Image (cartoon, rainbow, N blue to C red):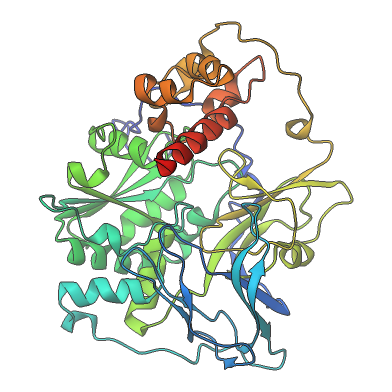
Amino acid sequence: MGLLNLFERPRTFAHGIYPIEHKALTADKPIRRLPFAPELVLPLAQHRGSPAQPGVRVGQEVVRGEPIARADGHISVPMHAPATGMVRQIGLAPTAEGPKAPAIRIKVYEGASQQVLFDLERDLDALDRASLIAAVQDAGLVGLGGATFPSHVKLIPPKGRWIDTVVVNGCECEPYLTCDHRIMLEQTAALIRGIRLVLRATGAERAIIGVEDNKLDALAHLRAALSAEPGISAEAVQTKYPQGAERMLILSLLGLEVPAGGLPADLGVAVYNVGTLAQMGELLPRGRGLIERVVTVSGPAVRRPGNFIVPIGTPVRFLLEQVGTTPELGEVILGGPMMGMAVASLDVPVTKGVSGVVALERADPDLAERKVYPCIKCGECVHACPVSLNPSLLGELAAAREYRVMAERYWLDQCFECGCCAYVCPSNIPLTQYFRIAKAINREHREAG
């Protein structure tokens, strides 16, 4: 077990899978800063909830860090200029999801120093709880692990609930991704500062950082840094996918199961990604907004893989040009290969929720078109499903278009589309895609009344 105590066993959950990690490509690569792209594309919907509303006009000059879009209600966050430049356009732009969406385009001034010129230092100790939560919203913080849920909303539990434990997600269970690993090693002080702020804002008594046991250097580093931090600990969890899923990590660390249809707050728990809290600890004391994030750029088609500080809005094409790609560049995925999204165009931008850019080669076996065979009732998908659904049965119902039955009788909505079932299926049945379609159709029916 290496650095783990002889009697310490990494905590875990039932089921799950063990995909090839591919993390050695970048795990030892320190975080570096890349040049600014000539133009940044900033979609107004980079978070769950209502999209931000433009607060600038075409032709307006902006400085790095300046607010350029305001939050539209409680479940929304503002946006800030990632670079000094000029607003070139406010209109539709390509997105990873497919349809074009409203965005602000900023032409970056090539000769600018790109210092953050817009900030407002705060005495955080003088802020009451409501003001602290408002400061989190003002910073434009969302879940940087990929969920993009506004961070300030989770600081306010539903009526009748309270938070007593903060779970910090340092698992990073997706193959290829190592940005959170490097953040735990290189941005430790900011991370701990962010954890303290969340403890104060929620009134929670303790925080536990869950770290997969393939990152023992980060675990040892955190434990040393936390030796004088009462109420904050770091615990090893087993390296297994999807260990970093909110429900699985709560089960592994606390032995508590989030009820079907419930929230972590029902158990008195709030879950935050390490990258989110490191940004919170960095930005709030300076009164700054989220304008950049750490991104892992990796995969067999990348010549110089690494972990990079990337301005929000940087086109994927520019990012790949900086690291170099092989002539065999094939599919490009935003996020990890299990739950990430393949992009149809390299002109889509890096947004707040993009933790990785994974570039595969055309000859990669994962890109080969596979023939789909009938289900052989082997049960592999049932054994792999981390929330104990029956993907085989759900797949048959999806093929019969029994979408409502899937939700009403077989707990379709408990599926969080981790991809475990499709990964292990020997018949190559695209189960996860079936479930996404089923949920989308059910959602359309509900909205139509």
